[in-house]
Length: 218
Image (tube, rainbow, N blue to C red; front, side):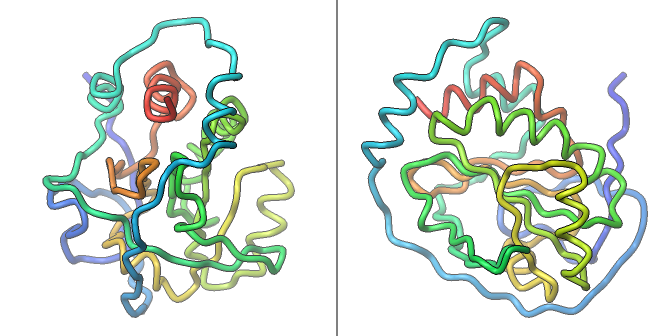
């Protein structure tokens, strides 16, 4: 029997972005936020990303197809092809991260908060996945929904996370993506399309996760 995944509920509306339902358990929070986001135009993969893929050593261990990896990770796939809504978020360092600037790369967008136990549970595995594949055209951004952005930078620094972190205190990006539970993660393919969604924590450093990134960055 699979272990029950705990997530933290942050709203009551259905997840409309993917077009599929999922069970949500534990905790409550309902902060306000206005939906935003724009659809970015399609783009091609950059030469730098292509070179990174061809020079990355092959990982030892079980290799799954992208389809099998998604199934093993229990990811929800979209019912139709859809460009992921573009967004720009500030980082704790005062810079910015824009999704459309990552075209040609595989992007994992994770929504989390420092007060969310299952978010903290999965983040070390996210870091290991990112470090393993960042040179092959893989980008990870963890978008914090903390109402006080000042708590994010020390939290990230203390744990030594090196993936990108964004700030979404008014939940504008989260609402645009239909996020109603934390953690929620969205897989964006190299063409900028929404490829899959995970509701709740995942073991992001297992063979299925590595196979998913390897397959989608080829």
